[in-house]
Amino acid sequence: MQLGKFTDFGLRVMLHLAVVHPQKLSVQKIATTFNLSDHHLAKVCSTLVKAGLIRSERGRNGGLRLSKPPEETTLGEITRVLTQNTALVECDSVGDCSCLILPVCSLYQPLKKAQNAFFEELDKTSLALACGKNSGLHKLLSLSEQNHTSRP
Image (cartoon, rainbow, N blue to C red; front, side, top):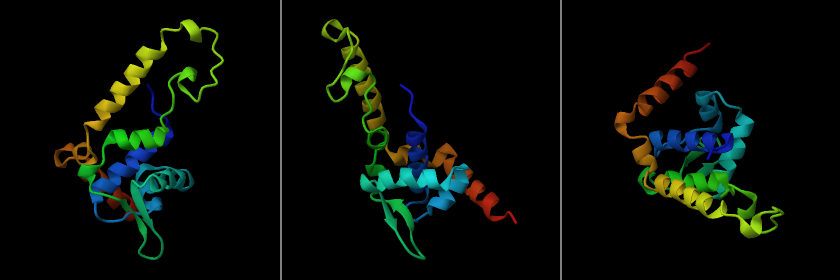
């Protein structure tokens, strides 16, 4: 199973917000840190806000922040929101599968089990664990911020 860019970017947003929790960051600051488009990242953040994973505050002192402590959000929860439970195969979607072999297919069950196992594994890891103090993530993000703010 391959995660798309949308999910990848969303996970990066969540990790960055977890590192600075409970502080806020702007979409622009996160986009600059990861060298991503502000516009595309804003769409990702909008999805995270609608799902209740992050809060957006407007205005001069506004920004994005996690809705709850990093210990209370799992990578599985985030990934489900960002992938919107994308089906691995057509027959797992809304019910209008046009696949010829559907009546005799033996692919669906193993693929569904694999997808469930994937999410179950991600459910075991909280944001706090994913950006733990020993991971080096704090240091890298701090260095990145220093590099971007020290440019002319």
